[in-house]
Image 1: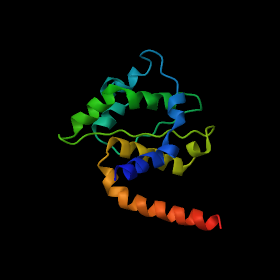
Image 2 (image 1 turned 45 degrees about the vertical axis):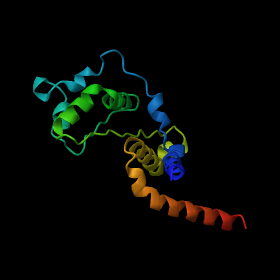
Image 3 (image 1 turned 90 degrees about the horizontal axis):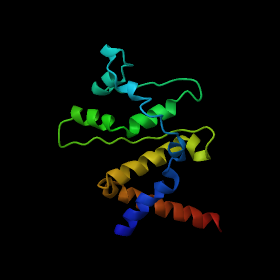
Image 4 (image 1 turned 180 degrees about the vertical axis):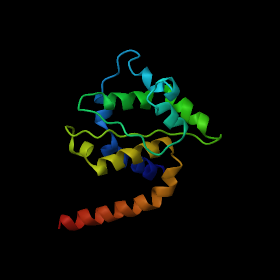
Length: 154
């Protein structure tokens, strides 16, 4: 039982890491703190968006303008979790999962499949209770892939 859960967790992990995230440079000291300035104080409105639990935020700009750096900053900054956790009733928890597409990266960094592998890996790692839910489906997929591999080698 434990072995199949380890297999399930390792399966998307082989394809689910996102090398782009690690390659994004850190922001210069306090450069991106402006993102937390409220709209009424001349800020960009991100803080208001985050507090209102909106569905989508769109960040655009020219290549090299710092979009990925900004998103990595938001992802890692403790303010993000503090704000999100203040919006939900306990005992629920907030989980931030992410993926950074990279046109110049390896093939999986450019694909929807790479996105799905990475998100699934993060979810399973952070919420191990999900493993028992997908275990029966994973077993069927493994059997099917073994049967396909066996027939291809004939």
